[in-house]
Length: 120
Image (cartoon, rainbow, N blue to C red; front, side, top):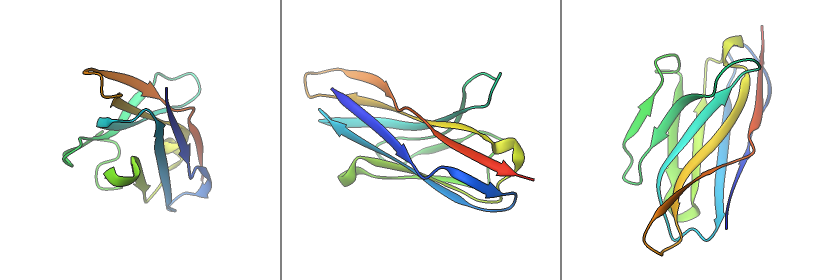
């Protein structure tokens, strides 16, 4: 089995920064894309950013220029550096990854999420 564990959330004032981490453990023979989603109360779950195993990245328009995704393949960890935070960034941030256990196919996994709250 595979576990994704997020950390780094918290309460920050508008304009501040936070760095989220998500570590994958368990039967992680190979990890393809890793992603960060966020979900605010009453809203749908939205893709914030993604990164492939070779470092190609995508960002939602709402976070471009403020958030940076990166990964450490040796540690099976993905990061999300968030700067110039706004109250609208308040949400539960969830990690998502496509992981192979070495038996020939990839499965999609979710973490439990970490709360980010940005005060005005």
